[in-house]
Length: 299
Ligand SMILES: NC(=O)c1ccc[n+]([C@@H]2O[C@H](COP(=O)([O-])OP(=O)(O)OC[C@H]3O[C@@H](n4cnc5c(N)ncnc54)[C@H](OP(=O)(O)O)[C@@H]3O)[C@@H](O)[C@H]2O)c1
Image 1 (tube, rainbow, N blue to C red):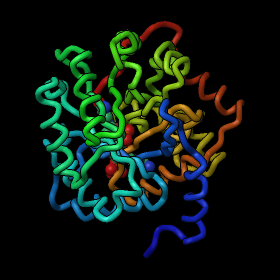
Image 2: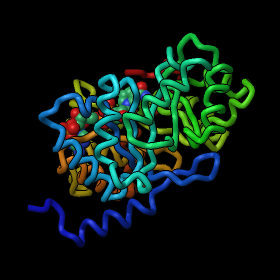
Image 3: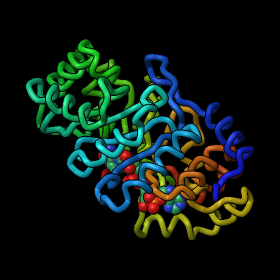
């Protein structure tokens, strides 16, 4: 039985179409994409995972984020299968390991990702985190891949403000399109200086683990009385409130991961929630913005 009526599906799609962030090269991305960490690792879940990713695409969550690291390429392979015949509809993001981000290795790493994904180009290629390879060398590698048409643009992940400043002062560093970092209602460290830095440069943030992934922090979020009250107000689940909060501005996009169709739908529906100023102030009261520099949260 279908979990959504055609009418509701069309409503959600219409909403999502209007929710975009703009990259520095003027490309529009959907505010809501799909993560794929830990997807593709269990053959028994394969069909379910493919179905969930395709449902997300159908609903308008057309950005898919993966990485060579995820399941040692298994996630990329599953994504390749899920997007077979749909490549044109997908904004495909993958990430290179820091130890593959040197000039002589990045080309092979990218080729391998392309093969697993069954495509001839990535829409966005990210340096997964900073390693020992000098930034200048990684940038040169990224620019070369761009010239060869293997990637259309590049960005970084897990870069804090100092890293972004260094990138900015490295030749061609300003060709970076996005920074993918951990961000959710219970982890607001980037609100202090990294997000303002991005706003000054007109460069969006891609929020990972927007649902707080799991564990005690998530339990704290979903059991919070204000979050629960807000969920009742909008007739949604507390986690949808958490996701809607990440998506509250037009310069932060989010990539929740889900392999349950019901969760995929809930996540898409979260993008339709429009908080009032008062709602946001109340959430700020219980999950305040930091008043001092916090080290970047990384998982
Ligand atoms: N750049 C980096 O270093 C980095 C690090 C971490 C993650 N990422 C990327 O960001 C993506 C998202 O982050 P994440 O996977 O860490 O965590 P997340 O999206 O915050 O949480 C995923 C977890 O939440 C569950 N979930 C999803 N939707 C739900 C809903 N509506 N209600 C209840 N539970 C729900 C999922 O279970 P089900 O699958 O069962 O629904 C899964 O267990 C990753 O998949 C990856 O692509 C990047």
